[in-house]
Length: 422
Image 1 (cartoon, rainbow, N blue to C red):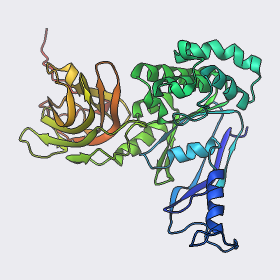
Image 2: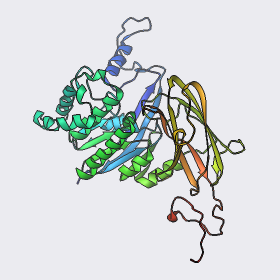
Image 3: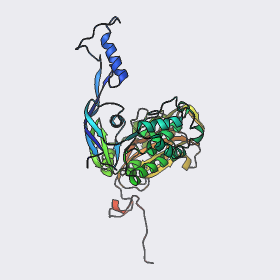
Image 4: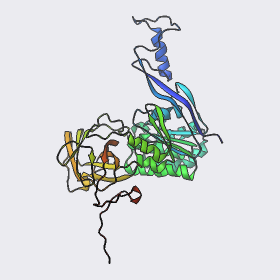
């Protein structure tokens, strides 16, 4: 049986600093640039006239090849700028590759960014039927799914309101509900789900599992949340610099991704490549130090760890809640520290401010751990979120006070115990 998706040597180049190409608008601009002279008057076009001026080539993708069988759930892993979103846009037929080809054998529903696929002037109801028609569904088929879509999106009172008046959260809820319920053979989901709240994200993950496992459809999933990738995807592909670095079993790919993370005492966060899509940078910098206040990035179980976060909040956050989660190479969250899980109650924050978390490192196994950071408020509004914001190394130690090693197969946490005859 032929794969449902085949990517054959796909490359995509963008011309920075010049006039782009790839869409009708870009092509018209390119043609007009060739027609105009330096004084602004039209000049005859010539075959060798330059189509881009003062530009540089940026290869977003280079020679990317892979195949996906029907019913597979494949995760795409990598930092922002690695080429993940560009690849999904090509697979979704939103943009064309510079070279190579993509073959998709089935109806495709894509959820790539807020606003994709909806007409802002149309109501939610009209957009549901429009999207179904674009996918080749009959009106009766769409109507049978309509109530289920509206119930999942939880926007019943606004279904006849133009979607341009929706909040980003409402927009994403409806977009995902449409993409998941109109029965495409292929569902493509990018990091856009990060716009929704935590409860909605869990709901979407459950629906994607149902789509893949219960209904046998194919899912392509991009996320910086390694735990979500590990739980949902049977296979993963690591992209870096527009090239495939590794494709295979999910845990092996996540391990490679973790090994590329740098462990260092200080990390700039404002332009961090792993920030969740659609969020404004509030987290500017992270600093890690030990009990003596000296910068450090390597600790032993039982050591005191001090993490300082530098923030800039343009608006006042009344009930700030900030958490730091520690995730292992398997994508499993081992523990987290958060101000709302401590006796500390933070005052409202605004403008430039620093927040400091101090804790004793639990007796976890020696490994590299990624730090996931989230800033919300008491109402659940998400202000900033960075998966894999930084890395921290835990070194070998004699925590248990014996000469015997503690093997990974024995569990994630080392526990001291006393034994005697009863």
